Structure formats: C-alpha cells, structure tokens
Image (cartoon, rainbow, N blue to C red):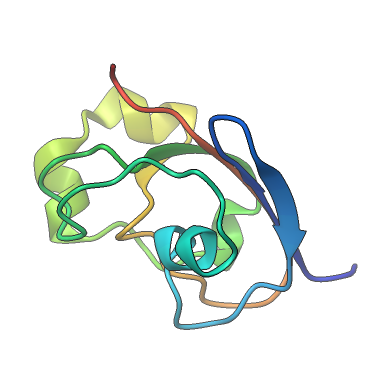
Amino acid sequence: MEAALQLIGRSIEKTVVPEPGKSILQHAKDNKVDWQHLCTRGTCARCRCLISEGAEHLEEPTKAEHLRLDPEEFDEGYRLGCQAVVKTAGKIVARNKTYF
C-alpha cells in the first residue's frame, strides 16, 4: 500500500505524503489546503475532521480531544486536526468538518 494523506478542505483537496510526527492540520497548512482552525491547541474544534480511512496510522486521541469531542464523534471517526498526529505511513483520508 502506498502512503498517501488525502486532505479535503472547504474548496481545496490535495493528496500528500504523510510525515510521521506531524498533525493533520500542519499537513494542511503546509500544503495550502483551506482547513479551518483558530487555536491549534485542541480547544476551539474549528479543525475538527472526519477520518474516513487510515485512523490506525494516527496517534491515539489526546486528552484535549477527549475533553472537546463526544464519544459518538470518536465512534464516527472524528478527530481534531491539530491533535491528530501521523504515527505511521499509510493511506489516510481526512475531511475538514467543523460544527459551523
């Protein structure tokens, strides 16, 4: 399987090589994908995203994510882009889906 991170922003979509240790949000910012965000600390949730494929390639959810997201959101595949850090190379699909 080829390592690829598909980033789906509000109007821009790009596929990039995932870099372990870097967050989904940082990948989006570095590649000029229109990914909503404000705080980058896991408190505003503007960077919330749906991981539809490749969650196993991300680090476990952080304390900040557990404080901000509901258990149902985790079950559906939601993470905070600023907190979801690539752990291993693989195929990952992330779509920015804010609350508003």
